[in-house]
Image (cartoon, rainbow, N blue to C red; front, side, top):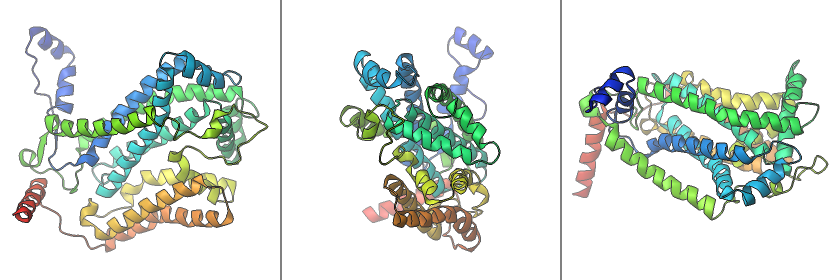
Length: 417
């Protein structure tokens, strides 16, 4: 969609450099003159927010790595004494990183739910969606390993619970668990492995984000009406200033929330048990992961069989990658799909419910509810989507993006009059 660049530098030096490495032309065609649908709303600002949060996590993570000691005997003190007290502004950098992870996932979930609602996974954006799912999986792995690094009681317990799951895999499970542990139990070698991977994975995520943006520029952006661009002149506007103004405003609002968490309630999202140093002989009474992993933890606990629990856990992520072939409705946006819209909001409530169940102490009653919700999670993708693809009566969609915008403008004018 961006096409060849028309950027021509004004200076002779700039033209010389551009003819050999058209870097500014790439930036101009991708982020300035790039045409975007004229009906984009603020739900489309979360891509820019996620890009900013990824950079913030990498920068703060690199600074923290300069002072962190990946040792079972020194990790806890290097975080709580060294970084928090002895490093200039170490407390702020640590809180920016820990709370930034939560906000990174918050923006990511909104971005994903927006894609589900407006059909951004449908042709021609299947590869774009699959790359997004890969990024999400890498985010989960990175976050889990980062949660282990402070080496508090909850970090140690979480590492033990999750790494033990790999032992349920037939034939190779024990070998994988021993490799992750670096021995026969969670300990210092485990911490070294997790620190190395936690440092490496964000750069791999950044590479996939580059692919994600590339795929976006090839397929073009979806829009709230789910109508493809037919006339570039009428249906689109330049990325700068129209989309960038929205992105800057959306990011500014998001940064207010970020600053509020970091400076006013920095420990609100942290588990109090993690303020105690890891002790293999003292397990916290209630082991839970961070909030953004709670729905999957609820699914895991709902399945009594260990191997089946692992299968369900990974299937819950894999199913996201195949939904472009599960929902075959020609209408993309839920704005014109009343039945799909209803089931979508039911699905959102199921995900929130699973998150709540994952945070509670396990009981037989809650386990039963979690099983029902787990079934509902998979039913949305494997039953509801395919059935609605052929049975749903959709509303008429606009013939073009421009028509959708003009109709909305005329309706607003009549209402105001």
